[in-house]
Amino acid sequence: MRYIVIGAGAVGGTIGARLHQGGHDVLLVARGAHYEALRRDGLRLITPESTETLDIPAADGPVPARDDDVLILATKSQDTISALAGWPSDLPVACAQNGVANERMVLRRFDRVYGICVWLPAQHLEPGVVAAHGHPYSGLLHVGRYPQGVDDLAERIAGDLGKHGLVGLTQTDVMRWKHGKLLSNLGNAVEALVGHAPGREKVVEAARAEARALLDRAGIAYSTPEEEASLRGHQVDVRHIEGIARGGGSSWQSLARGSGSIEADYLNGEIVLLGRLHGVPTPVNEVLRREANKFAQDKRPPGSMPLETLQALIDGRCAA
Image (cartoon, rainbow, N blue to C red):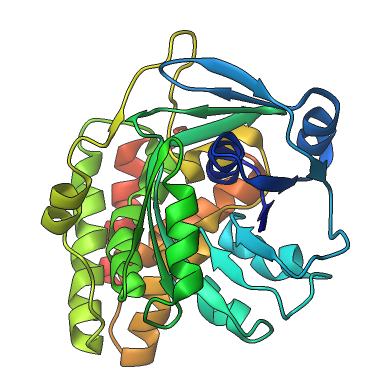
């Protein structure tokens, strides 16, 4: 079985590297300078324990498919549709992405869709290089069939992921875990906007409280932080890597790279959408979604908004 990792950035690059190290046939799909670096020099994987350069085949778009191919989609949610263009719709797709909208989008074109709930602290800021900060494992990944259940392929994917450097698990209710992860990811926009400013936790908790109330109202199940902490334990602790500063999560990295886009529409925007469907205002998440998109479009550096400015925008929206 060949794993084709579409979007070989922080998460996808780490997953592809660990599958390769576990003895699996892997193809990394990337774009631009990152693709050129992968093709020319291989993937440089930096962890708290080691630095390795891995000779993994790379492509910058669809290649002739094999019957045993499995697509692992690790792009940001805003790139899901374009990233899958040109790939045969009879291939299975596993969405190793934040948010809860990707699996449904993919199911419109692909018959076999799997969700992967990703806990994997990594960063990708330089072409050809991925730093994975998790220790002793780089990440913990839940795999399940979408919309629910576990089949033979889900079991095989989880088993293959767990062969080297990752923890792979199956979950019959993988989307419940992904909704729990969504709640934690609502703070991504806060970090991207104000960095690690003291007091930012108040804004993060307000966004999550707004979201929990809506999920409860809509009858959507979600995992709790206590469940997540109990399951993860100390299998994926974040460790410092000598010479590499961990600036922030995926949204922070999107701004740091100046990519021009950010995932806020599918994180905070998911809560905004749910609020509009149920006629419930979501001022905190709406401001975070709007301002994160402005930052990305204007290519402003991460962490450059004063916390007081963000709080004033939220207070103004709440009062409107």
